Length: 190
Image 1 (cartoon, one colour):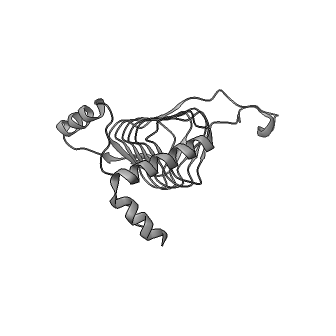
Image 2: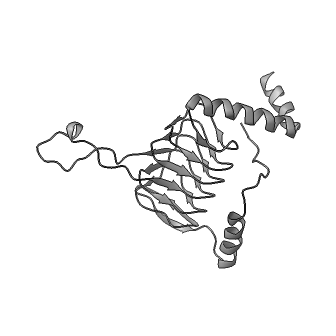
Image 3: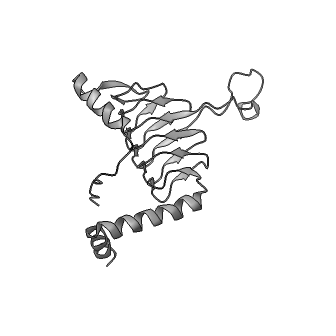
């Protein structure tokens, strides 16, 4: 019955978008998120710090853990169980247990526009991920990622460039420099 209702909702695009945005407003209110654009989609079951800044059409899937001082750009997609954590305990004080060593100042974590972060990836706090990049499933990102690169592994390293032609990069940069727009969402297959 529920799947049949979902299918009916999705065939009526206007009603579906209204339903989706209303549901998202309730979730943002519930999480206490004040700096999240109305078009951002947040799945249930995520743990998100209240100071999150999220721009247009970002997508946060189930089970994500987003720590403090994080900003995500437009069109960013997080697969399930993505975590942005770490850099929150000092371990450089001899003679003092780490639990009592205090915390260093936390740096901002920035995920620029049109980044796709795969299932179970871990992004360490203070990292900047360049626009148009892809982070592979299970990767542990410990350093900044340049724009339009695909990174994976533990620790994450460059696998290859997303685009092979400079004209493709320029075309994509031009699109990202325009005001964000709504397109067709990928169909959910479950």
